[in-house]
Length: 329
Ligand code: AMP
Ligand code: TRP
Image 1 (cartoon, helix red, strand yellow):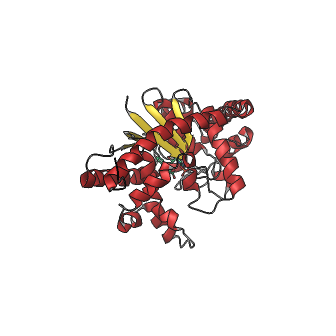
Image 2 (image 1 turned 90 degrees about the vertical axis):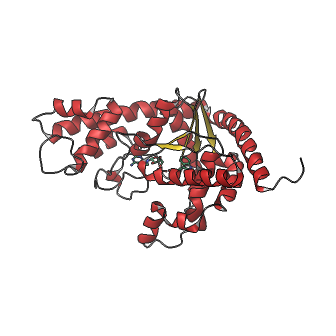
Image 3 (image 1 turned 30 degrees about the vertical axis):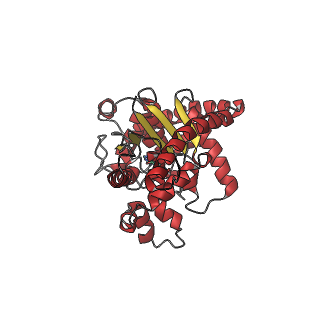
């Protein structure tokens, strides 16, 4: 069975974008692959984080992973900081990453271009840590949103570089980006990504939003003045985004939704999408509450840690040998 691995940072509250672009994919793949899904809390501290918020977001994330349909019996769910090999291999790979490669990473470049100051060295080198997250487990596939594809490509380069220099050590991973809904856009500015860190609350639907309030956000989503229901992301990005959300949550193809709405107005379509989102969140939150109340998260993480660490330990031992760290056999 091929291996698949992915992770999400526990910064901010999870959004519908995270679900559609990432978690939903993990759920569909869990039967097909040997899955590893982790909480990237070491990545969370690349920017200033409030410890009690980080704790709350991390607990929510694990419960939401399970509520979204990840089955702890099938998937190894774990917390990154529980497996110290991430930091260890992260450093070893940082020492094999060129400054120029990191400087080319769009996420970093965007922050610099925006004039953000006080950027940490951790934020700059985090793609090397991400490479370690992936290479520790010999992951064949890494499902991510489009914004993360570049980091998986860097991971491939690092794996190839290392293998070339020291002999076969790492599996070279392949990024997997969903076709529909790889990127969910902001409801108030559909040219921007729907993001956790959005200040304007109307633009983002959070998985733990009050379902009725979420419905309202859909109703007030920005569309256009064309007035025709069709899928045209370039000229009608707001509408295309709503159609994508609807299709991903309901399972109905965009084509089929569009044909049902031929000659009808945006308001009617928005109502249906609002209902879909409301129902989705209501069901999800009921499961989330059950999971939190059951107290299973601690056990899931403890089991996940054990499984993940057994694999990570062996990989780091191998890398140390290659680097000349192991002195006696
Ligand atoms: P982040 O919230 O940036 O930590 O992202 C966690 C995962 O969710 C990554 O795989 C992202 O690519 C994905 N993701 C985040 N926001 C969106 C979005 N608006 N649309 C699609 N995928 C997203
Ligand atoms: N960097 C990813 C993000 O910001 C999270 C992440 C960390 C990740 N390590 C990973 C994703 C390994 C996939 C594989 O969303």
